Image (cartoon, rainbow, N blue to C red; front, side):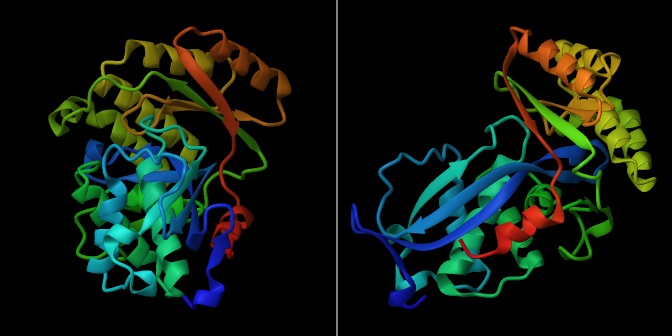
Length: 314
């Protein structure tokens, strides 16, 4: 980027080299269940700025994902802005995605940071390249075994894609895709709890493949809400999460059209029809009165207009 195009923050003589946005998401099919994964984007925004000096706000990066993103950018054949070295690049992160809840915060950070690098260097980057670099960064930082390719797609675009992470290329790994539920029709409640106590192993999923098979069949029929529920049933069983199972059952009994754990937890995603305010109010009261719940976020699936605004210059 030309020096005249760099935005200066006068208070501390810090330059914003580039900026990027992404969003969180939730699981429709856990990739460890059958070897195929699918996630869908939610209106949980995350924004990143690439700086030439450290931000005054501490950037929490316990998994050291940001250095891995820089490594992936270079490995992808791209250059840093203004001939700066890796150690001279710094970050500011503003996120509405609750971390470590299964809501794709790591994948979203990768996509937003890579977009900031592309913005800073005025580089054209394809969606497939973004996803490939995000996967590499997540593997390098040990936040994912497979690279969470389905999560990266969900944080980059609208709708969902069924992904085979074993495919030879990112594009070949997209088996089929759908637009997802209409954002105008549904309220999505994110029911957050304390961070999960453990990470499941691949062996933990083996006894529960039936639930994931039902989720896969629902996706083949383009019924994302049924997939979300079956996937969640499988995952609460994998995690032996008695409380999570009760919460999802309670949600369905109180009028939710879908409810299930996202990722490997601990958040429960609940979907209710927007036209039924009594149902939405009842569900909100149900969870806000639960002492095990730390926070309830009301959001929605993403529309194409919202994702187009992420692509626009900041």
